[in-house]
Image (tube, rainbow, N blue to C red; front, side, top):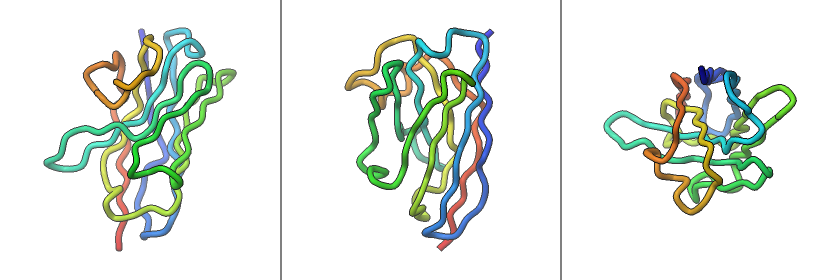
Length: 125
């Protein structure tokens, strides 16, 4: 059974940093594409970043240069380092996994197979 458990969310002031973690279990982690999504109240879930099994990464334009996605296959862990946080980054952040190779579709949440429960990030101005 696939399980994804996020941690590391919290409340910070604008300009601050947070590091989100996602612990994965129940599948061959290293062969899956992993991603981070976020959803703010009354908004659709949006793709933030993705990292494929070969380590290649993709980012939403809104977070490029501020966020860094990484993975540790030995520990079955996924990370999202978030620097220069802005109030508009406030959202519930979700870890996601798919057995498909990443492509231009990666920001489409319907294409991902597995989801965590989310961790809240709140950025105050």
